[in-house]
Image: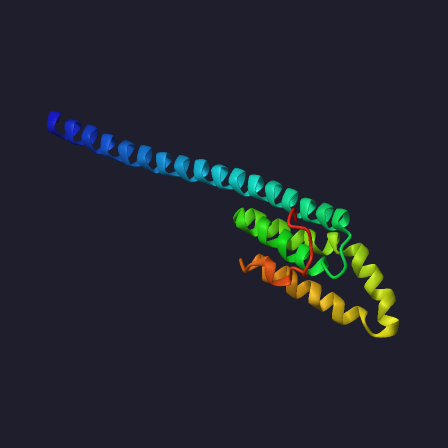
Length: 145
């Protein structure tokens, strides 16, 4: 009888140890999920700031034919932050483009708006893909940008 009690006790300890390990693994998964969510949120916030800075620079520069460069640069800087930054760039690009998209829609009457909007979208994708935004840099744009 004592042997069976001892075996039952050992079996209970083994099951408890397995359950404890499973809970520890679950805890690590939750901890990693929280850490990943926090990292994504931080990257998204930083990417949003990058997009806003590029938009502000574009407005401050007020330089002819520079909008494609600033589209590419904002998306490039945001995407460098990581998955969260790339997400922010994808989400924010249409909103930052709204004033120019509205202008382009008016220009559509003359036939220029759609091509200009498509070029903006190409510049956005170019920057998000990690390519050098200076590809779109117009000659004479001040170096501070």
